[in-house]
Image (tube, rainbow, N blue to C red; front, side, top):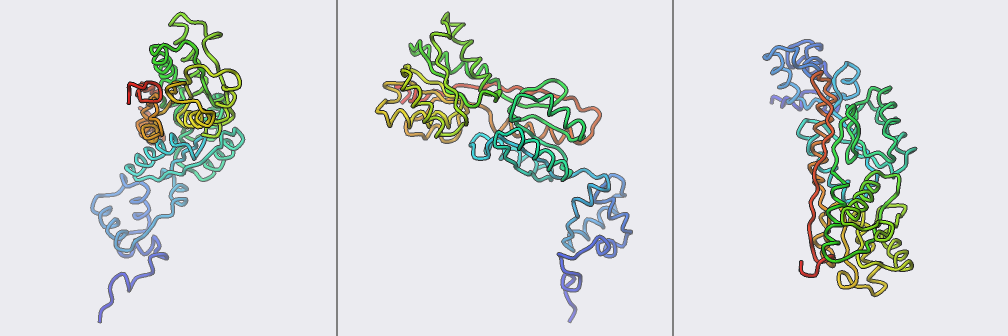
Length: 349
């Protein structure tokens, strides 16, 4: 009895480019060009090779493809905190964009460390990835651009606004902070605390800048009306620590947090001290992650278009890394919005 073609041929794990060439009736070079440079191959030849690849289950060696000059099908994403819901949603968008383009994504965590970030960039460069999406651990982006220029590794900044010589996608954090503080001022609060993460992170620096600007525009002196509390990281435990410090200093009637996780921590810290939200303290977060609406007291938050930030950044990287001479670097800045819930305004219930 005749054997099935798959049974008669080599095992899928050992299928070689020569097997594909033999089945398609073409040269090894024609198979290589079909995989790496399909625009150079005639349509009927390409169709025969693609049919043979499908029948044999042949999987091209990606590193070998890169050595031939073909574009890598891997992009890197380096984030500050892999546990952050913000970066998880952004990574989901990047993965979708990569998948639509026939690529895969490598997700890396710099742990908000400049040394770790440099190590990851070296590793991704050694792996010959197509390009990197990066949220920098510090604001020293010029040093990053110099390094990446030497490595010839395409880069797009995610959630970081940079100059015209590098692509970036971010939200307007100054405007977002203004929305939050104006909301609290409209509710009658004239002393507001801002809980921010590490001061070297530009996102928190910009949100602090926006909070101060909103107070000045309202005719208030930030030195008297704004209490700033910075913590070392951006999670719930750090928010609880900030609440403890604010209670010791004298808790104001409103707290604006630099992200939602810090706001959740502040809520827990206040609850443990018997302070009620929003009856005693109005609370506002930033990012409007999925959990914000379902928090114990639904959290008022500045909504970033997180998914759009990740998706557009990934597509900019794919475009930039394609080597198209017509590509123009873009600094995309998306507008935030305020979502009012019960944590700041009891009427929102």
